[in-house]
Image 1: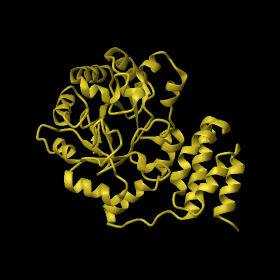
Image 2: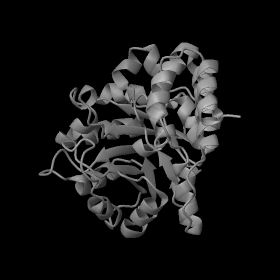
Image 3: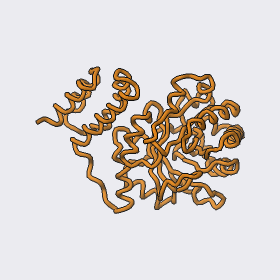
Image 4: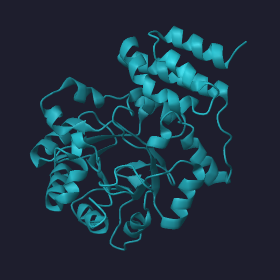
Length: 323
């Protein structure tokens, strides 16, 4: 799959942009475990042009995270154009427009998935962003606003016509949020539409190598994007590749691997954000790393009260890796 000047290889596996999840530390971990492309957390165009420090910091990344995309959202063509230019100055591989986020603080303000209710404005924003930068522009969106308005086939054509170089489709409507099962049939229709010439990336419910390969074989997508299933589970990227290449199901990570990668993730978070903030923000990842292990609820209740890396390391290694 090629986007712009970057060849991501055959059937790449991509880390989705997730608010408060896909920060630099987690992106590094996922790249180390086989993610072919990672995205920043989504960045507000309005906050960017106001020079809000938190939003600007979301665009910072290390060379080790490449290839990387910066995702922006908003509902005003002019501010989105300016935000895209600011994102371009950080020199990512691509800029992505978020037309898919269903949460109230984004869609409720007329951005993200809300643009599925205003296709002319969605097209205008996309056209202005494409014209304003030299980097490839891509889009992430959903099937439609609700069950009665699944318009993604038409939307994909119109966005391609104004210059996007790839589209990612989450197989749910905005009304579904993250509930129910993702419907890939319309993703397949977009991919198999003879008018479509750009890569089509499928997203939704990819939680194993088998599922990723099944979706590729059934619907012909050029790549898969993985979001929630990667939280605390960066091994999923290598798992997809191993199943695709060798038809093998990877063994689950050992307890030693879980502890080692979790602590590396924590140490990176601390380096990036300082010990206090790094430890606080790491808490959302523990359940993924240690899901299914004996007495994890008890261990989690203990480690989320601790305030230093060394304290957390001692508890995790003492409980799960006793000498």
